[in-house]
Image (tube, rainbow, N blue to C red):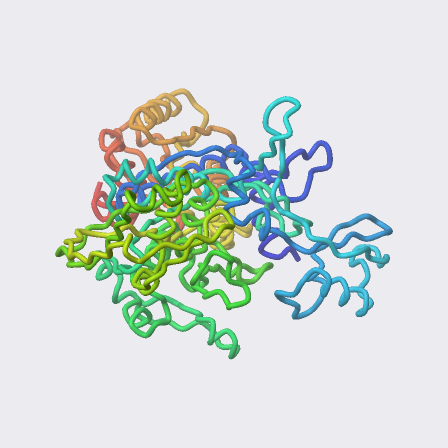
Length: 576
């Protein structure tokens, strides 16, 4: 009997949600195409994400290049750290993650993994052949920029770096003030060694990310109260080590007890929860798991994954929510030579004592001539205790110079400081759109028996269903087709996707639209010709209610935008 994954993928492939890429050539692991319905659903999911993060939260969106120059990924650490240990079978040529072939191995060096593979007698899982040497393998796709050029570039492994390299311009766009955030939805690429989890692990995938720049010493969120009492299933690192399950706790308690590092991180964990639930995922199959110390990314101070339970793959990561600290901004500042800081004003100016070091160039010049300016600069950098000595020694260009203390005057003065320059920290929620897509299909898949047959249903939310409305004449006759096509025209003119279908028996047509997740079907029948009413059928309950044709646009608008549910609409029109 087929498991749930096979049932979902059967519907997905047969009905045009997901197709293996390059199928006529045998396909290639880690690549999938979205069919007509999958593309429609994915665009709606992305639009819903934008609605929450751009409209409700107020963040602007940018679009950066898919290819980055080598310097970007050298600064970010991806050239050095974005690697996996790889081992290739000498017999069949299949490649594997070497550490995945060893139970309980984490965070050890390539030579140590190689030694363990050889000493433990591990063989190729595919053919039983002998394995070669373990090597380091960078997961980025590389390319060259320009014809015949030796300038190397890489397909981006995440969308974030394009935002970080635009930091200066973004800071000016936001008026030079913290906090500010920017979002991006786009493709990312990772040349996985051997992706074997279907659509769960892809080499080309879509990310939706927010990079939120905050003051390093102020990680309170102004709207934290919105979610402070919300109970969220959390699995902190200490609980994982003890083998415990996730427990529901109030967000406020988790932050106050130090389970979640601070309010900004907590707020975005709750906002992620809100998005996933509103999108239609099963709340009983969701949790937030904190990264264990040994799996924490090189840039992260703390990180939580939103995970969903699936039948075949168990708990899978959908979203990573990380405090990246100032790692990225500092790294790009160092590599580029730019000062990537923000001037932050104090609430009240502060008094500060500064030391001015004044060098008498009239005395120093005749002594050291053309080297006098360098000697003066070196003197000014000495600590105060050195400057108070009778004889002051400095080294310039490998030579030692000695001057009398009388050529130096140290003056202390008090100034008023209005603020300071800081390197912002970054909090990043990163959503895997493709994994969320699959999980939505699995969590919404449902079967029941109707008239002795299995009815397959995708219980997708109306706002995400690729075809939210279908219009079906009861029979393929002109007098029923004409009003049906008029309804289709009016619904499409109102800006909603609407499908028309007159093929086969009405019951079979209902089943087709149930299977692709269409929440509502409108049917014209012979009563339509008498009183200008049509039936609207609800996918989940299969109940129907008659509605006047003149009110169809209003009804459709409220149903798709979910300001009405079917039962509320049914109560309104039940007496017609």
